[in-house]
Amino acid sequence: MIQFKNFVAAFGGRKVIRALTFNLPANSITAIIGASGSGKTTLLRALCRMNDRVKNFRVEGNVLIDGMDIYRPDTDVYALRRNVGLVFQKPCVFPKSIFDNAVFGVKEKMHRKEYPDLVEKVLREVFLWEEVKDRLGEKATTLSQGQQQRLTLARTLAVGPQVLLMDEPTSSLDPKSTAAIEKLVQSLKSRHTILWVTHQHDQAHSIADKVLIIENGQIAPFETPVARPEQSSSFTRVLQNVQEYPE
Amino acid sequence: MHASIGARQLEPVGWIFAALNLIFLVSAMGLGIFLVVESVPILRLEGVDFWLGDDWWVGESFGALPMICGSLMVTGLATLLVLPVALSGALFTSEYLSPPFRRRVKGIMELLAGVPGIIYGLLGVSFLTVGVKDALNLLDGNTLFTAGLLLAIMILPMILTLSEDALHSVSSEFREAAESLGLTKLQTALRVVLPQSVPGIVGAVLLGIGRAMGETIAVMLVVGSLDRVPGFNLFASGQTIPSKLGREAAEALGSGLHWNALMALGFTLFLVVAILTFSGHLFIKRNSQ
Image (cartoon, rainbow over all chains, first blue to last red; front, side, top):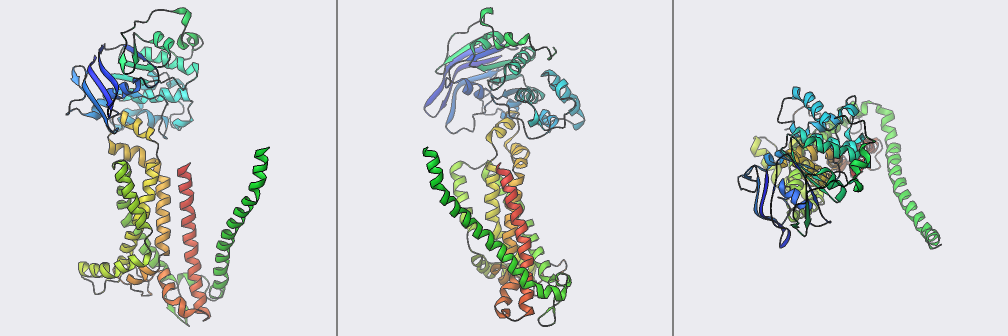
């Protein structure tokens, strides 16, 4: 469970997140929607302490993951980031092979002999294995944008995070790739707590258990998604056309 | 309409730029041709022995091997000494220093990179030769080692600042992607930033080597100027191509074969430095794309 208690995030005197207090249940998908500059990305980055080195960035209050305050002075930030994975808006694969990208985050943590099994496992999890199993040695930059985004997700999953933060992961993807990522995230829910930032209300309602609206650094009450078939999401619109991603 | 008029108006300027570029190109080619033409008499007489011979007696034989060996050893030593310092300094400046400190360090490095060789030469004569002599208990501090050490000090700022540019130009997206996977700052620097900067760093090192290869006055003041193949003894006096040219060019002017032999030495140096500089520019260009 993730708990925010009077959490404030600010750049100097400008508060981007204002006294947030709410809980996110484990093994659920929470979508965060809001206008540009409303603080969505800051909230995600604060959860994995990616803003620590940003000049003038400061926080108040507490953020607890499984009861542990992640802003305690003795927190191991690197361990925290392995536990709280962040998937960026734009896929950023390293100019290395697909295989090397998949194991990039665990190279100093496990034996080389274990790599192949891990690569297959995480690539299967993101429904990429069948597409790339015969060209794992090729540069990851040769993949399509959608495949690269799934590879970055696989790379994050390989590290074994408990929480997945997804910062508009489908914003640069075509509908087919978007549907694949949305379906993929649904399949990950049973093992991860997922926060998904998006601009698209229909996407948020179709994939999330909870929808959080954030405005000027503050949240509106939780919205529980309701089935609105007339407002079909990219997921529901396209999913029927996407048969090649097996469960 | 306006665009086409503008384009026509710019055309003469474009031709001027092209002409200026042509001047530089013709100058470089002219220099090469001049060196080749002036070298022909000695190369015709000595053949390949000019590069393989180890005796240089004016009026008798002209063997360039001591100078070639001296140049390679001094430059090689300087490169070996400078690489770890320049790379770690560049990594530290790029990845750990705050932007204001980074700008200050860069400014100082760029200033030092522009200091003329004679200033470094005076520093070498004043401190390095004495220091090396005392520290290593040598009879004479004017050695190939001293020259290599001095060249390392000379090319350090240039290699450091160009390498830092290459490291700093790596997109911050890669750093963030690596750090989001739990990599430390050092791991990110070594596993993500450094590999992507290799072409730029190699280019910087090649440019530094080019400068070291061509440095005349500073080396001349500390190398000992002894025309002999040094073997593997760095702590003996030696000679480099530029220091040989610096010492003898004025007295050899118009003296026939002696002059031609020096020109052939110059041609050898020109070729090596041209290849290195060209390679450096290619690598830097590749890194910036």
